[in-house]
Each structure stands twice: as C-alpha cells, then as structure tokens.
Image (cartoon, rainbow, N blue to C red; front, side, top):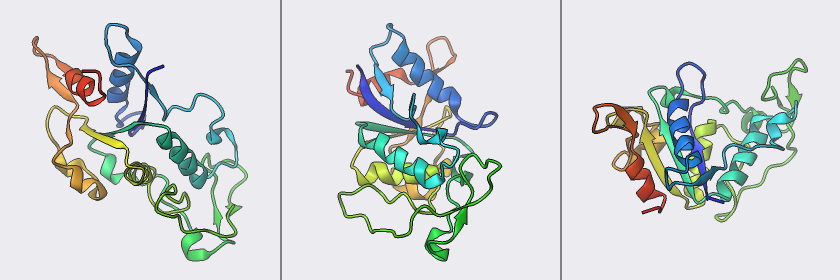
Length: 202
C-alpha cells in the first residue's frame, strides 16, 4: 500500500479544481510513475455523509480522522477557493445547545437541534474541535497544522497566484507553487518531479 495522503480541493462541478486531483490520482494509479499513495480524503465506505442526518460537524470530525492517519496534506488552490464558505454556518457557539441546523444534505426533514449539549475545549494534542464556524477548507488546514502534518500547497495555475490564498494560509505564500508547468513539447502538464520529491520518492 502507498503512502497516505489527504487531498483537499474544491470539487465544484463547473468551476472547481478536480482537474488537479485527477492528475494526482492518475500518477498514483499508473505503474509508469513511482508515486503511489492512497487519498485518505476519499472515504470509500462508511462515510458519515451517508447518514441523512449528517451535519457539518460530523463531516469535520471525519476530516480530522482522515487527516490524522495521513502523512501529508495537499491543498489545491483555485481562483474561487478563498471565497468558498461551505461548512462555516453553525449557530452553536452563539445560540447554545438548543440551536438548530440543517443536515449536510439539506434533506426534506428540515432543521434539527444541535447534537451537542455540551462542548469541551480541545487540549494541545487533541483534534481541532469539530463544532466551529470554519469553512471545511479552513478546518482541514487548521487540523493539518495542529497535527504537524507535512503541508503542500499548489495553485491550479501555470503561475504563482498568492492573491488566491485564503488569509489563513498567508504564511504559506512563499512555499505555494503552481501545479502546472510547460513540458518539453510546449504543453501544460502537472509538475510530477516536484511531487515525486516532496512525497519522498526521490
């Protein structure tokens, strides 16, 4: 089995960054390349998202578990990343235990009461608390930093795009690089040599 790598990206169907993730998976699934990893962000079965009453806090707890078992966390940054707010709506902190929220899938059951009657403050070695107003991406980033994971940040671009970085990633502007390069034939290609080195295959 390959390394355990967690890939965080915007999977929006029309203006997301699936193209970068597809290239990364393509390298791992092709024996021509030495890169071999399991994308722990892809929970094959048993994901909490299958529960019709799955909430944002349930997903964040699952993100924590998947990041915990990963050695490296890759963040793919596109031109819409900084404006994505999915996962950030939570009334618990301000309205208390009897607040309501809409399940992740926004099913016909409508809103439900908060699942948490009490909250605890995580210790320095604990996971990031899953009841918060961070977007899913910010939660993943904070969890990766909290757990001291190797973090790789790439832009879905041929060029460095520091203005695309969310503010909480500002300290990483100097290490974030473009995912795409121009190959010997003048075509756009993923920067395979960078990932081969960063993931420890060289």
